[in-house]
Image (cartoon, rainbow, N blue to C red):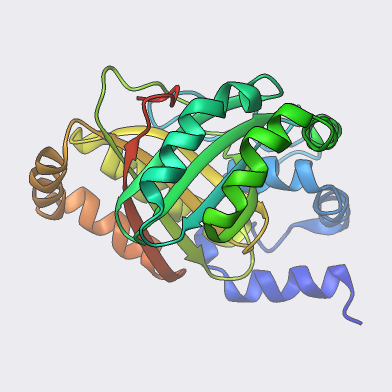
Length: 292
């Protein structure tokens, strides 16, 4: 087995110098890095918020958070809060039945935990719905799942009728990155979920370049950033950006402006160095979705 110290050495060698520490890291700093890397939640916060270190510094140096991209310098992940992405693919021809069944019974589900948003996929994988749930910690999620299993009304009125309508379903646990908070759009519109599969190594390798690319798009002003989520369970090194648009035509016009903005082009070029693949979906909120 490779040692953690050896793994970190390989990450250093693969990453750009601007993302790494100076060569005089020292034993004390390296030991501190190893301790941080052993904690999942601390690792998430540290990787997303560490800046390039100066060539010389005192032994009391501590990582500092990067600036917000315009929403917040939130501390998600440190307090245990996470989100669950649930994606259901409906049997062709059964989408209308699924939507009505869910509309009639969603109150039974939201009685147990907080629903953030519920959307149908307008462009992307057809016959698909996507919903986003918030949990304070894993203990709460476990309690919710157990309560739902024992909720006879939920099981009889919804689950028993819904499952035959499904072709597939997936679940992914994500944290919000520390430089965003969940933002509510100003009015009704459409949403875009852009998912990036990044190179192995995590935010310590590509986090800073990725943040600059997202920030550049946000500053163009053609869309509203709702939240940025980093995978914890599911496909690792995956990041999801949830955007709001007034409508699909405004999105198209804004994209054309972004492609002509040299700041966006430069930031995307740097981030694309670490990109493996990306997909996007245009989402339309359900009537019962808190995010409209």
